[in-house]
Image 1 (cartoon, helix red, strand yellow):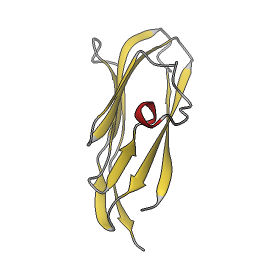
Image 2: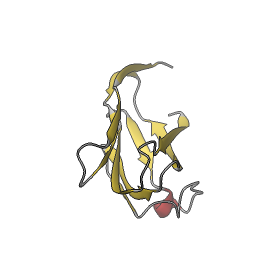
Image 3: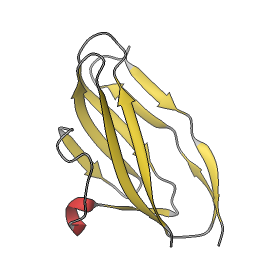
Amino acid sequence: GDDFKINVRVTNTSGKTVENIALTVPLPTAWEINNDRIGGGESSSSTSFSYQDFKDEAVYTYFNLSSGSRIDLTFYATVAYDGSFYIPAVHAEAMYDDSIGAIIPGIYVEQKK
């Protein structure tokens, strides 16, 4: 299948430092995430987060952001199957402050040969 990259940027516009942010980047079932930590690949964000967990259905990343700062994350994936698929919403939220969060709505995508 086709290889591609997923770029995600989270910016802290709250005016204060936000700790324990959880970012969820879900993937449609037709995509396979490439875990660079296993394959020895290059990662653009290896030191800017506290913890990162690659699962079949999503990438979960945890980090802190000072006021006005941002984090840029890049993931690599492969399209495993052709067809129409739904990418669920991407969301970032402060784990212990439910007043801080952001959501990018999900979208439908189509992969054709």
